[in-house]
Image 1 (spheres, one colour):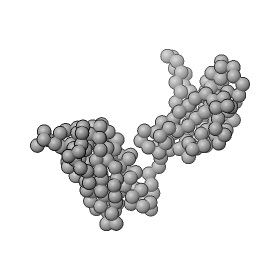
Image 2 (cartoon, rainbow, N blue to C red; image 1 turned 180 degrees about the horizontal axis):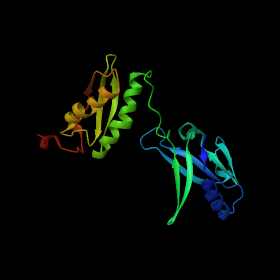
Image 3 (tube, rainbow, N blue to C red; image 1 turned 90 degrees about the vertical axis):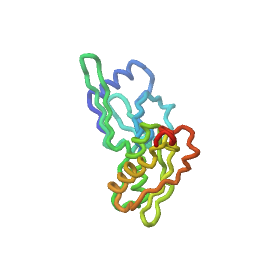
Image 4 (tube, rainbow, N blue to C red; image 1 turned 30 degrees about the vertical axis):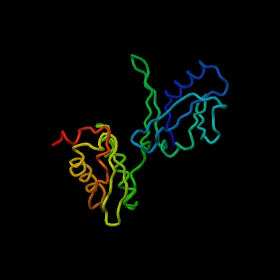
Length: 198
């Protein structure tokens, strides 16, 4: 399930021995799992810190506790510790932490939401913007609502047609068009004000 190298176990063991607290172990959990912002949290944990639903992985001289809600995202994770001339470096690789794209057999709505959250929104975030899926019609029309710096932006139409629509139609079979349902007049912090985009 999780591969912890000998060097990583030795590193943890040394740190735990330094603390000299009975039952001290290491707790691993996924933060923002299944999203583009997913990350791993690694911390020391005493038995009193545990919730009770953690999975226990016995290591040489300590226990690695795995947060129950994180199990599916951390399956196949690798923890390694590399000694370098400038000190050591702990590396955690968790290939499933951001989730897995829905299968081709998943609903059109699931597949659209995945691409919006994992491909479109990270791009829009560079301009303080985002979109949310308001609706996916039976005939494949995706209706979006812009937010943040995209709401009221003078380039929203270009972003919609040349960016988002192209991406969704290419990556999600079944999408026939993309429409904007945003009230752009109420945007209070557009990336490019509408009157200056002309």
